[in-house]
Length: 88
Length: 88
DNA sequence: CTTTTGAATCAATGACGCTTGAAATGAGGG
DNA sequence: CCCTCATTTCAAGCGTCATTGATTCAAAAG
Image (tube, rainbow over all chains, first blue to last red):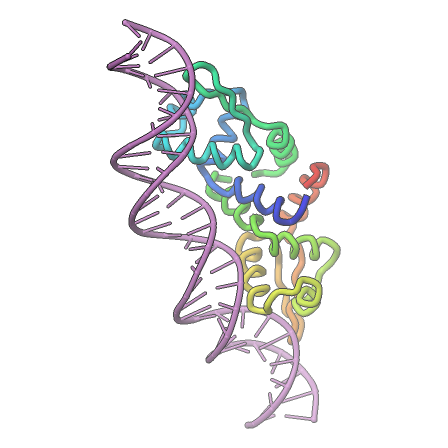
């Protein structure tokens, strides 16, 4: 993994809203509308940040009828596990 | 540690040059002029990135005569240790 | 097929961060 | 002192990112 790839990964983590999303997804797979109710940002803004996380490979999206479920990707789970001993 | 503080920490890590500096400092305390020779960016640019790392609390600077030594701060050491099992 | 609902995309604006060149600071050396 | 060297700061340009409002897409319900 190159320096640039590492930098891009950290860049995806460098926003409070995205960290909030990851915290929320830490428990279990959640649909966008449920994220909406807990996070309180405009729908399109939430969609934007989910896109950034998706393109960074940190979350995975699955369509279920009209809804889209998001869950942590394995790499994100590993990151969170590794960081948990720190007081982040 | 708030979401904003976590985001700021990750933002400090989201640049290839800064990651390169942290890698270089991983071994031991190093003066700016030695970093200069291994990293190959303009002196003022290197100084800028060192400043960002300093303000993020990731590195510590010490003046020694005309030179300034930089070393990893404890929090950075912990981060690197935590991340090492991942393939970052 | 039309409407409705959930979600994503587009376009535009403002702010922030990286880079560069020039100037300034700080500490020794002659 | 003056000069030189190491490092930092300043000012400006430029691109990228976050946010907003409007529009579009996808899937199901009536």
